[in-house]
Length: 143
Image (cartoon, rainbow, N blue to C red; front, side, top):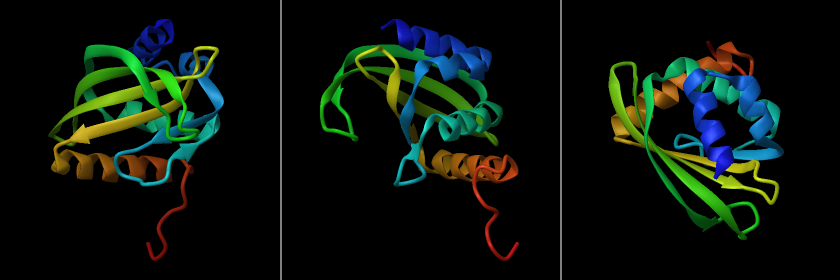
Protein backbone atom coordinates (compact mmCIF):
# COMPACT_ATOMS: atom_id res chain seq x y z
CA UNK A 1 0.00 0.00 0.00
CA UNK A 2 1.38 3.39 -1.03
CA UNK A 3 0.50 5.06 2.30
CA UNK A 4 2.60 2.49 4.18
CA UNK A 5 5.64 3.28 2.06
CA UNK A 6 5.11 7.01 2.55
CA UNK A 7 4.68 6.40 6.29
CA UNK A 8 7.87 4.37 6.45
CA UNK A 9 9.84 7.05 4.61
CA UNK A 10 8.44 9.80 6.86
CA UNK A 11 9.36 7.90 10.04
CA UNK A 12 12.83 7.08 8.76
CA UNK A 13 13.38 10.79 7.94
CA UNK A 14 11.70 12.05 11.13
CA UNK A 15 9.29 14.09 8.97
CA UNK A 16 6.24 14.96 11.11
CA UNK A 17 4.73 17.14 8.36
CA UNK A 18 4.62 14.15 6.04
CA UNK A 19 2.96 12.07 8.78
CA UNK A 20 0.30 14.77 9.20
CA UNK A 21 -0.82 14.19 5.61
CA UNK A 22 -1.13 10.43 6.14
CA UNK A 23 -3.34 10.40 9.27
CA UNK A 24 -7.11 10.79 9.54
CA UNK A 25 -8.25 13.59 11.85
CA UNK A 26 -9.68 11.02 14.29
CA UNK A 27 -6.72 8.60 14.22
CA UNK A 28 -6.38 6.24 17.18
CA UNK A 29 -2.94 5.18 18.42
CA UNK A 30 -2.82 2.00 20.54
CA UNK A 31 0.33 1.96 22.66
CA UNK A 32 1.99 -1.05 24.29
CA UNK A 33 2.13 0.84 27.61
CA UNK A 34 -1.37 2.37 27.83
CA UNK A 35 -4.69 0.53 27.65
CA UNK A 36 -6.79 3.32 26.16
CA UNK A 37 -5.73 4.75 22.80
CA UNK A 38 -4.31 8.17 22.14
CA UNK A 39 -6.93 9.87 19.97
CA UNK A 40 -6.90 12.64 17.38
CA UNK A 41 -4.30 13.88 14.94
CA UNK A 42 -2.75 16.61 17.18
CA UNK A 43 -2.20 14.17 20.05
CA UNK A 44 -0.88 11.39 17.83
CA UNK A 45 1.50 13.74 16.00
CA UNK A 46 2.77 14.99 19.36
CA UNK A 47 3.32 11.40 20.43
CA UNK A 48 5.20 10.65 17.21
CA UNK A 49 7.45 13.64 17.88
CA UNK A 50 8.35 12.08 21.24
CA UNK A 51 8.83 8.62 19.72
CA UNK A 52 11.11 9.92 16.97
CA UNK A 53 13.32 11.55 19.64
CA UNK A 54 13.20 8.49 21.94
CA UNK A 55 14.13 5.64 19.61
CA UNK A 56 17.80 5.13 18.76
CA UNK A 57 18.95 3.14 15.72
CA UNK A 58 15.34 2.79 14.58
CA UNK A 59 14.99 0.74 11.40
CA UNK A 60 12.21 -1.14 9.65
CA UNK A 61 13.15 -4.70 8.74
CA UNK A 62 10.02 -6.13 7.14
CA UNK A 63 6.61 -5.45 5.61
CA UNK A 64 3.45 -7.59 5.57
CA UNK A 65 0.18 -6.69 3.77
CA UNK A 66 -3.29 -7.91 4.59
CA UNK A 67 -6.56 -6.95 6.25
CA UNK A 68 -7.76 -7.05 9.84
CA UNK A 69 -10.67 -5.98 11.98
CA UNK A 70 -10.21 -2.55 13.56
CA UNK A 71 -10.65 -1.81 17.24
CA UNK A 72 -12.83 1.20 16.55
CA UNK A 73 -15.70 -0.21 14.51
CA UNK A 74 -14.94 -3.92 14.18
CA UNK A 75 -14.91 -3.62 10.40
CA UNK A 76 -12.18 -5.24 8.33
CA UNK A 77 -9.75 -2.68 6.92
CA UNK A 78 -6.70 -2.85 4.66
CA UNK A 79 -3.73 -3.27 6.98
CA UNK A 80 0.06 -3.30 6.88
CA UNK A 81 2.50 -4.57 9.50
CA UNK A 82 5.95 -3.01 9.55
CA UNK A 83 8.49 -4.90 11.63
CA UNK A 84 11.18 -2.82 13.34
CA UNK A 85 14.23 -2.89 15.58
CA UNK A 86 15.43 -0.05 17.79
CA UNK A 87 17.15 0.82 21.06
CA UNK A 88 15.79 2.84 23.99
CA UNK A 89 18.11 3.69 26.86
CA UNK A 90 20.36 0.77 25.97
CA UNK A 91 17.50 -1.75 25.70
CA UNK A 92 17.06 -3.57 22.39
CA UNK A 93 13.48 -3.47 21.14
CA UNK A 94 11.81 -5.75 18.61
CA UNK A 95 8.43 -4.52 17.48
CA UNK A 96 5.69 -4.15 14.95
CA UNK A 97 3.67 -1.20 13.75
CA UNK A 98 0.18 -2.17 12.57
CA UNK A 99 -1.29 0.47 10.28
CA UNK A 100 -4.97 0.26 9.36
CA UNK A 101 -6.40 2.43 6.62
CA UNK A 102 -9.68 4.16 5.84
CA UNK A 103 -11.38 4.14 2.42
CA UNK A 104 -9.18 7.04 1.24
CA UNK A 105 -5.96 5.22 2.18
CA UNK A 106 -5.12 7.32 5.23
CA UNK A 107 -4.10 5.74 8.54
CA UNK A 108 -7.10 5.55 10.89
CA UNK A 109 -5.64 3.17 13.49
CA UNK A 110 -2.06 2.62 14.49
CA UNK A 111 -1.02 -0.10 16.94
CA UNK A 112 2.48 -0.68 18.30
CA UNK A 113 3.59 -3.91 19.93
CA UNK A 114 7.08 -4.37 21.36
CA UNK A 115 9.12 -6.92 23.23
CA UNK A 116 10.78 -7.82 25.58
CA UNK A 117 9.08 -6.57 28.74
CA UNK A 118 12.22 -4.74 29.93
CA UNK A 119 12.16 -2.75 26.68
CA UNK A 120 8.44 -2.02 27.07
CA UNK A 121 9.17 -0.61 30.53
CA UNK A 122 12.09 1.54 29.31
CA UNK A 123 10.02 2.77 26.36
CA UNK A 124 7.05 3.62 28.59
CA UNK A 125 9.20 5.67 30.96
CA UNK A 126 10.99 7.51 28.13
CA UNK A 127 7.79 8.29 26.24
CA UNK A 128 5.97 9.46 29.36
CA UNK A 129 8.85 11.80 30.22
CA UNK A 130 8.76 13.15 26.65
CA UNK A 131 4.99 13.65 26.76
CA UNK A 132 5.26 15.55 30.06
CA UNK A 133 8.16 17.66 28.75
CA UNK A 134 6.16 18.45 25.60
CA UNK A 135 3.09 19.45 27.61
CA UNK A 136 1.02 16.64 26.08
CA UNK A 137 0.18 15.06 29.44
CA UNK A 138 0.20 16.62 32.92
CA UNK A 139 3.17 16.19 35.20
CA UNK A 140 2.52 13.57 37.89
CA UNK A 141 1.26 15.05 41.16
CA UNK A 142 3.73 15.32 44.01
CA UNK A 143 6.83 16.05 41.93
